[in-house]
Length: 433
Ligand SMILES: [Zn+2]
Ligand SMILES: [Zn+2]
Image 1 (tube, rainbow, N blue to C red):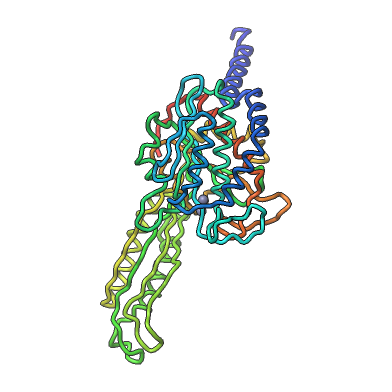
Image 2 (spheres, rainbow, N blue to C red):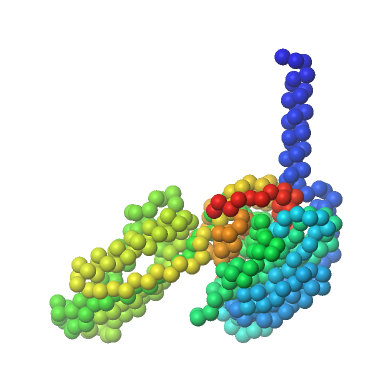
């Protein structure tokens, strides 16, 4: 064996390490510049967040929000498109060097909730509130655009900032949200190679959490109408009791997850509404049930739909009753692309430190960011918004939800590093999700 062999191995390893670290870490100087730019823009970012919080708008009605976002992005010299998917705003930041295009998405809509906390920047719009933290998401994306605009000379490629309306769902009879943005070409021209997004969550500010693979569930809705036959309450044998049948259907459905699905692949079936009957002494001829199905896999998703209808059909037919079953697919699971996640996860640890990055199990709530993940590799993470001095905080969609604004700085920092590291790789990743 030649004498130089161990040395060769060591130098090859050192070279390997330096390549890996060069691949994963934006250089120190860029990192310092990101921090300085966040500081420089902090007052404006905070002012913008508070304005957005005070002026929340419902899904597909984000008119003033859209105007403000577009004006801010235009002032940064970005190429801005408005009225995408009704009120959406898309802005392209072109780096000084050429390369791929990566996307940064924020949602814009608020919820029909009356804010109950007494923050000085409380909602001025009665019955409407940013209770899901989309004002924080928009502030992170705007702040990221501000910082990245100052760092154009360090960008090889483009960043597409996507401000999307109606994440909470378009009003009845309307379309909207991520799927409409995609339909209107948000992922094309220039084509988006990878897309990034985040959602606030009630854990410590300064921390983030992620999960490789599925991170959020699919969300489908179902409606079941059981059609029996009415009779006198004292003569049930002359009718077909829709209430008794509904009770059996509910219990049957609740055995799907526990008895029919692989226990290592989580799923939830919840019936949130039941309606039927006329009065105490009349056998009900009709009962309506409404519920939601959450899964992390397409296998469970289609299995549940089929099993559910089998139960409804079997139960009603055994009593000579009838039924109507309707199942509407909503968003698919939010899926962190494995190859993209593998490249991006070291960035999270480098930027925030091991103690501030949590690897979590997937959550059964849903997000329409999943629509982008179906088309291009996506990476989605959770941003902590709980003030450290508080042991607990009001959850998302609560009238008392009050996220810690310092989370915006963490969000911007992480997002800037993710986008820059992804651009630095310039790897066309195949979307196999
Ligand atoms: Zn929400
Ligand atoms: Zn949300």
